[in-house]
Length: 236
Image 1 (cartoon, rainbow, N blue to C red):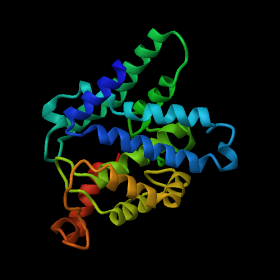
Image 2 (image 1 turned 90 degrees about the vertical axis):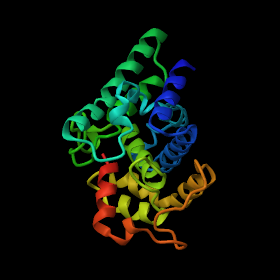
Image 3 (image 1 turned 135 degrees about the vertical axis):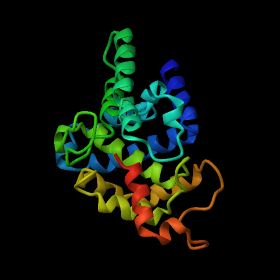
């Protein structure tokens, strides 16, 4: 419970809510359930593993407790130095969780949580951080978490952006298939994207206009260059 309290504290500092933790937990289960049907994952993505993955998802950004507010809450673009400091949240989170697991004295779902904290900003093409892992060298748990986390970032309001519509999230994630994201994870997402949309709507942080909605267009989406710049800032 202490670890989960720290995770919630990190989200509060990042102007998130507990619903972000709940949404991403649902997203990772949806993706893992789809991938479990593939031959190469049947012996790995077992019901017990998927349950551990779902429990671990809220801990992926726990390392943000070590990032200064001046960086975490900055509404504008981060400088190179600030971005380098922000990237350290992956290592901070893994370190916190390793110490917690050592205190337990036995292997638990925290082993998965460590993978998520450390590697959820790695990219399929090797251009991510903190270790620049590529392809299947990235733990499958982190590949799943990466897409779930980015979908939630895109589809919700953040200090530096409005929420994108579900269709815009689909477009961005599909475009990043094979670069940012494992192609099979993207394919799994496309199989259950309607459930992602419903979850995002039902567990919305607030009632707010959605960027790119049919009711009212926005300048960000009217300007594809600006829209792409915002989405690039969100993606790992």
